[in-house]
Length: 201
Image 1 (cartoon, helix red, strand yellow):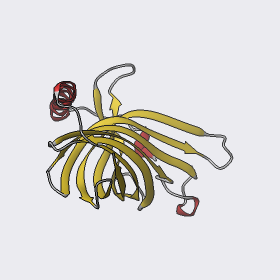
Image 2: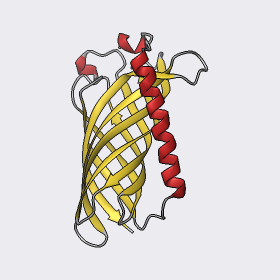
Image 3: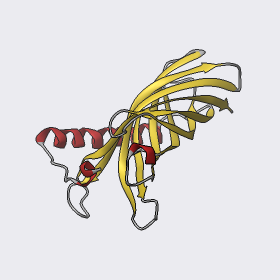
Image 4: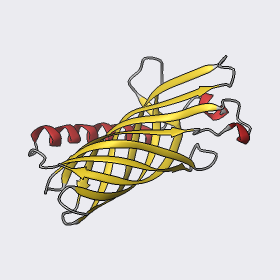
């Protein structure tokens, strides 16, 4: 928990990474604004585990996503995910027994054609961390910009149903100065592996 309170340090490498991220975000906006309309809407409910990074051990994670993907390779989705007890439970000796990480992300999808579609995904959005002690005397809620990258596959079961598996890396970004727009890598990161059913419309 002490690592969350320390100040991030920037470097030329991170500065270059920030410039690349801004360029990639602009490219995504151009693709989405000028590209063809998406032929299919994908509605997915998923569940799995969050592990590695800032987590003490693996924790359950669940959520849902709505995506838009046609016969072409380019798609887009918005997803919402929750990982309860992200920083540990009372049996792990943690002070903040009520805690979670909530994400709301928009991501670009690049997918292969066919009945089994392999895709890569990446994007950004909100990463919210919440910590509270049992007596509710201390309650901390923190909203940061977050990024995610990963991939998975969609296995079509018919015209309106598919199985989905997905693994992604999540990390928060923090402002290097109060009120500033410059972002640096934060202190909360983890991997998430989930599976679920996708309804296609």
